[in-house]
Length: 542
Image (cartoon, rainbow, N blue to C red; front, top):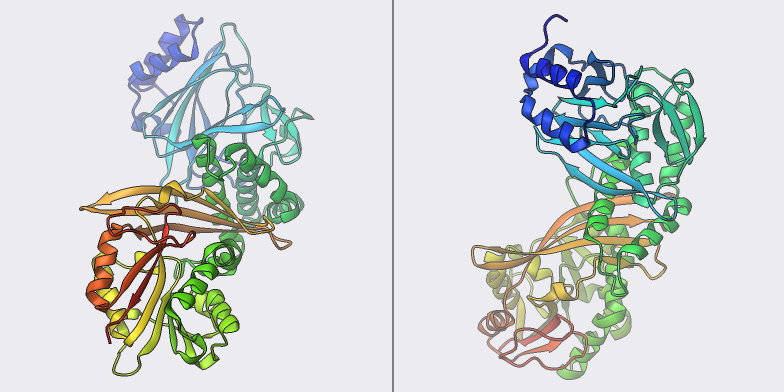
């Protein structure tokens, strides 16, 4: 290769005269060398074969140290591994890599202790106790990394006899070369019993192993096809995944289903998102056009039925008693009807005719389910024309109005009033500005086979408050697991007083607010209520 770049020659010279280093000292030395990404380009290997997990080139091999560069194509990841005989080392990463560290816990399981995106140029210390995984999570960026490993005494292969952790089969492979998935037998020196992985670690192992073997299959390398199919079967198996997921959630949440370990909470969400992406690729489908497409199948079990049972049926009964009206004689519109479960409850309990109750929602996926229960269409509240039809009662459940563009919230309430007949009613529920204090991180179906992981946060934007919630749903109620990453939902959090004012101004009649669970009246001065959910009962002036 000829002369080394000055930065790399500096490293060689220093390592030839310094043997008793520590990982932190090696990291400082690597930083002092001021290596640039272009210094590694002569050893770039982005055309590595599909059976390799990344490109691996030796830059310099000393009597007791090795300097290598790895080349990472988009989506490529190493297997979980340690570094063999290495006692001190450091890695400098010249791209947006993802780096995860693991440890064997007191129960003998391999658990992920961190997984984070690396800042390009970042340098990480390496010791002989480090178990980790590195890769390129991007879709269109490739980059190199610089690796230095050493020991005090002369040795043939510093990274020799490295452990590669196959947590799916509870095995450890021993190898002297690249830490690749699906190593051929001749590159495995020995196989020994190894640890299992907790849910998060095992799931990510399955994801990356399946990806690598799929790329191999597509390149015509079929030697791992049986292993790949076994992994896919295991990945989708609800029987195997459900108990592991429930156990992991039990360890990192409290009795109120709120997370108590933010590091592990973030890790499990990261791994589920990666698994959802793989599932979409394997099933050759995409939910981009409608984020509720898969969610609609889980919505009733996770949200609607528990909400109907816990507070919605109660406040609907309360509304009927307070207003004294006979719903069987009224025409009702449900704004944001979702799957129509609550509306079907209203029809069945109060003898409302099918043609007298009409549901609308923006999501076609939700409406597909709703149409099996009620008369429903996709539609926008703002497109309704009171000259065409008006209703006796407008109903809206599960804080639909708070998903509307906050700048149009008052207009939406006015539009609702416009389509209600004089003397008619609005009944619906909302969340308080402090709803996050109740909001759980995990929601379960009654049988705990459908699980929703939710990461809420409060955000102020130009004087308005919002609750953002990143949502991942896991359906294990069928033979095959299905994961739906529903993205981040945003809900507007206006003060209760402002919401009361919107309804008073638009309806012009009596407006009353109640705690949605206790049904206690909410005073005009109140900022919140005990359950953090409230109902609005508004009657339009005759």
